[in-house]
Image (cartoon, rainbow, N blue to C red; front, side):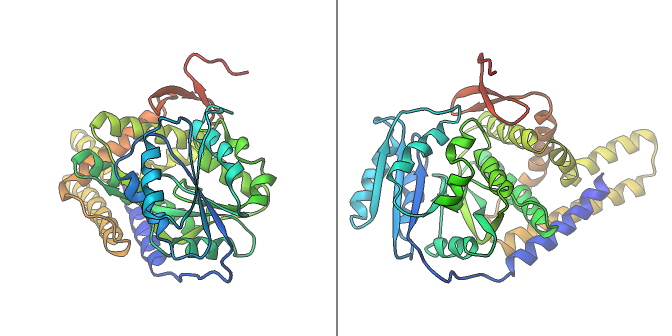
Length: 374
């Protein structure tokens, strides 16, 4: 397994370098766009991240914000943005109506009444973008057979070891694995960083109500678009997401929720991703091999190969994708933690989300603790 993992690191390095050097498309037309930004509570750098969407070099953009509570602190950021950009077309929807277990999706359903344009672009509140963001999205969406365009993203950590560990997981595990899947012609994911589609496509797959109980609402929406006979494509630009993990427990709960969500949607594929952790596997090989009397030269070769291939991938991500540099000594603890989280993902179905306890059923739907769903 450590040997397979080393080969995977080489393949991922090639995928990263190939994607970074690929052609960037420009849209043939620039139709009006409605940006949907569901909000919930205060987030570090919320104003700064949202402000990047007000500086887009795109002719016609409507921005619809949505909250469930009139006392939500995120409203302050929206008011400041309105004052700073008085010419922007901005709507704020405050509606507490709930349609399912996923409150973010309920928020989106409420926001749709204010959306004016045919092209809808949904993105998470912790994303920041470059001014040409929508040109990349529309260039991808207008390609023949495309039903949905989505974006990859890198982690941009706040100062602190836990945030840096969280960003390392995104930059050196999530990004390469997504690009390997794309390279091999697999089904690319649908990521909350960006979900762009036409109103008619959304209506055809059942609207946001079709994913109202799903924790991985982005993944499920992409699956519904594929089932309709259209493709999900990844744009050529890379977004940044603010990673703010104040403690180890916050980081661990977040990653375990993410891992159990992936396990619920793709259990065999996620189990197979164990080979993406060659260094911890090589260290286990070293420890067990020495105990069993295996010659140390063979064990050293396996370990050295795993370390060299892993460092090669990390270097390619840093240079080709220009992800934030992190302290060098974090990489080994990060890889060990990732393997531990993967194993624990198969040891239960409980998750913590927005300070509420849920369980994931076999279809990946959220079930509140104590609730019985028929």
